[in-house]
Amino acid sequence: METDIIEVRASNYFARNNAVLQITERDLANIQAILPELRPLSITPQRLVRLNFSPAGESQNRMLQKICNNFCFDFHRTRTNALLLVLNQEIRLKHILNIHQLQNLYYDLTGELLLRQEGENPVSKPAQPPATGQLIQNTGGAGKYRAR
Image 1 (cartoon, rainbow, N blue to C red):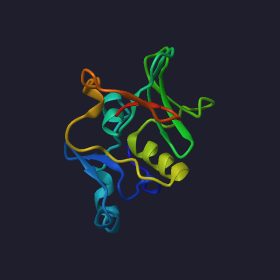
Image 2 (image 1 turned 135 degrees about the vertical axis):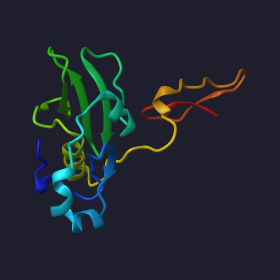
Image 3 (image 1 turned 45 degrees about the vertical axis):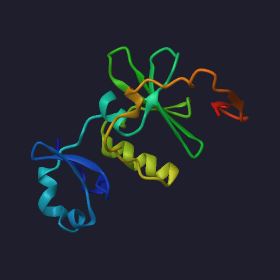
Image 4 (image 1 turned 180 degrees about the horizontal axis):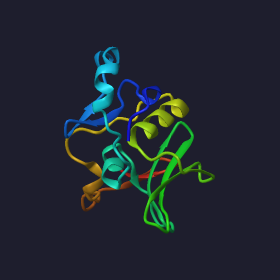
């Protein structure tokens, strides 16, 4: 599958020579030469977790979620076991199949870049309960009970 030049933006991730490449301004200046070597990265649960998507909780077929600037990006499993992006629990976006497409949509809607986290994966670490005898404080709002 050939990559469409219109979809390539700075900070997008692609496969190139069996490695993940994050597009830079320098790459964009030389895009005609490298475009034939770029391959889209398909959306997988592992790649979504690296992009800071979190487990979505107890919902049928809903797997991973990210909320930013009043937009909720949910990924659901379909009957064919594919991943489907659902925006704000209403809009099904079947055409978003690759990471760079998700990055472009995310930026267009939120104004923020969707980038990989570096180092350890915080989603895979279990949450640490407060130490014994430590008080819990009601701070109000979502996630309102926190250790003090």
